[in-house]
Length: 348
Image (cartoon, rainbow, N blue to C red):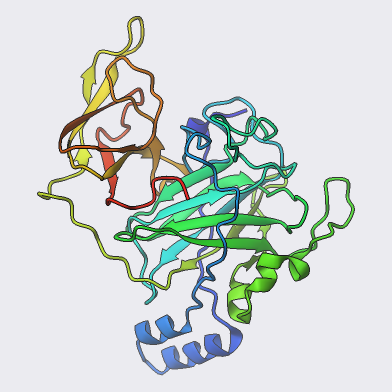
């Protein structure tokens, strides 16, 4: 079984769902020589906002390995049970422009229908131990994202679905949506599931037909694979326009790591130092992830020899802040992302 560092995947085709009538109208306008930014914005279907649901993982449940590969946890040799699934697309603002710096979160049930979520201090023991259960992605200038995961499992009362959270730059709360399979749901033993899209309370609650169609996805075989891997594309169209937050006193958040001593008998670590401000939450990204679209969020320690035990930290006071990482930056520097005071910190 390949490790995360060795895995690659082909980038899928990205699209904006437009109904048939508007599609042909846009072709006619284009052939007449018109430019379409305003018309295209009008043709976009805003993604439906639905309940976050009760199973967003608590802070203690979220894996240190919170990258965009949910099918494999850390560098475990075994992948999660289930059909490997890729989903990719773009995050777009209300006018159809790609959003840079959007935080995209994905969580869902494992093949048996169990979530990572647990009210205890650890992850749900019933959840597949090789399934991350939660992942996140920070978009680049193209607004693209990509996740590798498994086909979501079924549980009583719901059809098959993925949960999504999207936080645009400058906003303090995530927008939540769900996507569904354009197929009849069957249990692992081959019997038809009691809850299909048609009688699922969340799916049926999306009363706008265009919005409902936009989250009903077709999955197709990944070309060149023989293990049943599938893929789909989905563009999240926000009703908001992002506001690029400014950092106090400016300055670059791309920082070179300095080699520093690590735990006794352990390997050296890399120290990243930034000017921190009270109330701001910080994450550190480096090293390309699937399709090299962006970087993975890396876990860190706040001390030179302490356990690498967190992947986000909220400063309680102003001043210089040191992070210590085991992972060397592939490109020679780390990107420190910040969330403004009051923004979501990984909990509902």
